[in-house]
Amino acid sequence: MKKSTPGSLYSGATPQQVAADIDSLVDFQPEGISLKQLETLVTDCLLPHLMRYDQPQFQSMFNAFPSPEAKVGARVALDFNQGVTNWQVSPGGAVLEELCCQALCKLFDLGPESDATFMYSGTYANQQALYMALHHFADHQGFDLSKKGISGFKHPERLTILASQDAHFSLKHAVRILGLGEECLVLLPLDDNRRMDVSALRDKIIEHKDSHDIVCIVATAGTTTTGAIDPIEEIADLCAESGTWLHIDGAYGYAYKLVPDWAHIFSGDDRADSIVWDPHKQLGAPIPNSVLFVNQKTDFFRMALHSSYFNRPGEVEPNPGLKSPPSTRPMSALPLVAILRGQGLDKVVEDLQSPLVAIHELANTLNTQADIEVLHQPDTGILCFRMTPEGTPTRDLDALQIRLYQQVLSSGERSISLTEIDGQNALRLVVVSPHTTYEDLWETIQVLRKSVNQ
Image (tube, rainbow, N blue to C red):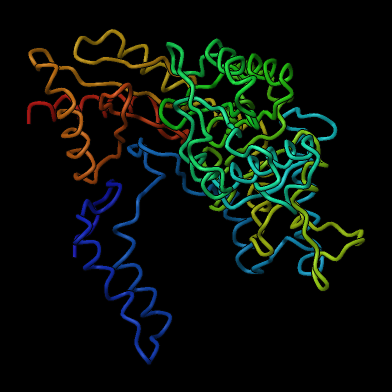
């Protein structure tokens, strides 16, 4: 059994070794074991292989350990195991979620008619947003999408959703599940800093005017590849001109609107019809914790389903479950409320700003290094680059990035990620935790340099 060492992120074990250790945990038997034995089994077999998101060497993904404040809310949510979609099953939970959603709309300076709901993930939130966009489009075509479905459109093959080439892959999941198919999703070129090219968007709208029906334009507020923020204001202008639903996928980046020095790059977000945000990323809210905002609260009416015993028509009590499909989901609002109330907004903003400053400082430094190629200027807390040591043939650089990534990950000492940009392999650093500093990032660069010659 491979153990993790002090200060490491995880054991560094291979998938086969992890499976061998965990196998005894899933060896279900007729007789149970004591709680103490169970705890020992989990501690010995599983915990060494879990990733330590709270360590500054974790620089690869969007995960975070829950803060002490989040644990207060999560503990109550776990102890009471509340389903919060309906007043009948949790009066306090239902009202808390409604009040939290109203407060979040104000916090992000959204319009007076805006509203929000909690979702299981950004993927499901994107899916629901596209469904509402499609339903909205069907309304203007004179039929109820919930009744007729896709067959209600005279030419369903014309339905189109526009997004950037770096939009999240969950959009593909969404169009598959909605029955639209991936061919309806048109991915647009990027500008020099990997934001959606607005000129290309404008040209595509003109090109599709007579041959396609544009249902929705998706702007990404923090792409998962480079953290780029699409030019929301300009996209909102084009959506207003064409009468098209604007959805913002801000699952990763929208939190940074709360940072004063970064707020301006989100200008126009209050004009979006729907926005996704994942508090489980930067704020460390326990998973699941995603939020779907709408500009007009009446847009949630498209999701409402009633029954004879649950969410009955005409009930005046708050039933958050009318806004989204799950009829049972956890009290996700409470940990988020505990974070915002417990830490205070000043501390939340300070913690959000810290990784942004660290990544930007690193980018400025790497731009002066002869053996490193920086592939973009960061909008948020992600930086992609390539190690390009002197004398390495260009044809070997892709293989080098893969080798460096694998060496770092297998050590168990730190975590970086690998991505592809313009057909080339690239190394990628992601910082969501305020505990990861510029010095921690620079240490990773030095580790990579040493690994080049190993």
